[in-house]
Image 1 (cartoon, rainbow, N blue to C red):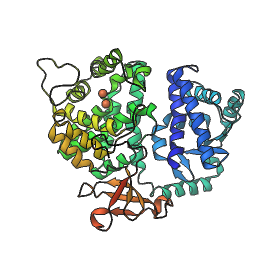
Image 2: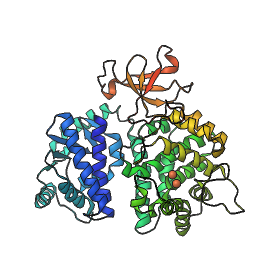
Image 3: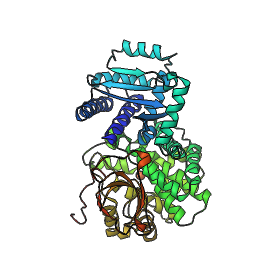
Length: 463
Ligand SMILES: [Fe+2]
Ligand SMILES: [Fe+2]
């Protein structure tokens, strides 16, 4: 259920992002508002509550005293809106309609409109007829002592705040992709330095920290998939690059390359990019132009990094010479583009998309191994080696009945280190009470089931 709350917050934030690009009656804005209104009604029904509320504190979402990590990263547009409104949280009641949400998204999208304080923001909401959406006062107004207690309590709930740097790094990566995606259609000026700075943050972590970042790499909403996809490809690529012993400057460029590799997709019309069904021939050609478009956009911005250019232009080239774009006679295969290709395909297979359910990592490995000519064998082996069968962030069931989330892989591919999130009776455990378990050192325990929601059947095995 908690995940559903997080999903809904991201959906509300996406509504603001869509409204920034389009207009009230645009089909995407209408669709997002309808989906969010339906999801809100379903969440309230499922939870037996009359309102859905959450706080915004220190630039992050909070619910029941816990930071919501994924939404805090993916829901920046809504965090920014809360800050502009001078409010400390939102309350949505069951009567909120799709039309209300369109007005809410419009107010959120109009960044030029400044409010002097919460009272003025509330008047603007009343003028728009948004009586079913409440604005909470900022937490700081509760009083300095209470605010401090609140902050301490939340830091404690989140493992003494030790994941805060991870959130900031991940947020910087997410912003680098989303701001550049917007810029492609707006000014056309791509901020490669922003991507490099975000990459440097990721590389500053040790391997364990980078694997921890992977725990946050789950996004519920396919509207944001081009952004989440690039962040995940960047994180995966650098994990493998590190495993291969590449230097820090190269890894930083590699991370930026992962963040930018699909920048050309910004020029694909949303109707094609988000089309749920099969693409026709003409639409497929439009999609397959994105590596060349991306390389051209980077060149137009004066980009000089051969590594970033190679990854952007060549990440859909197969190891056996197939794929796209068409290779000129002088083209030499490059290991960076091949690495981004391996990570790109793995991410796409294991991600949720409008037209498909995600495959389990084991299924994805099996499919990729079955198409062995398509991938650089050493890079594919390194991917499997780095991730193991249960990549960080996967939810699993243990042989003693507990549910757990994978923190990092262990020595054996199938014996990860995990954090138990539920007890044997299925009762969720508070974050600070979740035991860390190293299955390499617990011979009696094993993973019996991969629970990550919505995992599709494995077509390679039919299992
Ligand atoms: Fe691509
Ligand atoms: Fe991609």
